[in-house]
Image (cartoon, rainbow, N blue to C red; front, side):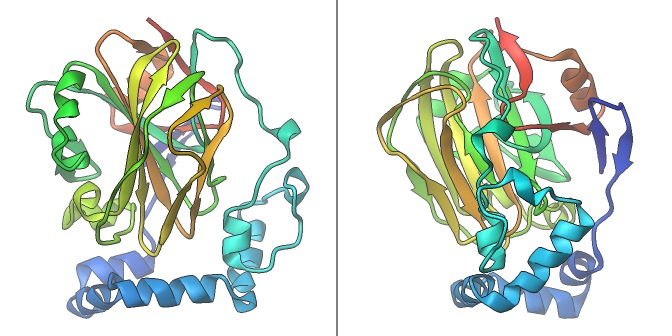
Length: 286
């Protein structure tokens, strides 16, 4: 898997860690995985991640990724989950306010695809349709020839996400699923977007039309915490956050609503993810 830093043009080759290779590529690992994805194990993991002992992971991550604690409202964390859902101070959230600019909803790795009729999307060796993603909701038919933007968050990323424009939203629709990791090694055997828990809503935006936003939970992610049901929102306002581990956000646009920035477009054509930041410009209104 290749990831590109759009500021330095550096390409990073990301490898799967040993624990994931064990879980998905060995017989013993497959048996272990069947236990890990059970609801009781997820609940147990949540209890551990909310305990003080889990701060061992917090300390290791802060050191490994050189996370600047002073950027956050809290500098001392009671657990790994407390660290994971940490909130930045407003002055460190740089939101592009130009109404014609499309912004990233989160710190993440982004890849963009065109939506064709009856298309199946390949994402890290997994295939799925828009219809399956939205659990058979017929609204997906209205997004043919549009674009789908997939934002993959890792444990080191900021796990809060924002609204991409001014507008109003519908109620959230929750789809239950089995938890699997968002790492690409999982997708060789499992369709993550069919198996994972997810929540979606329609954003009635001022500048980009009706946009579908989907939040997807990953392995041991027990909760997707959206702040609002039916609601009037502002660009850059926090929409919600994830608890535990890695996660994914998906934005689905209708035809001729957006123009993706050229570097992101070219990277996506070459199956390279682009590193983007919360509130950063990633495209424009068409």
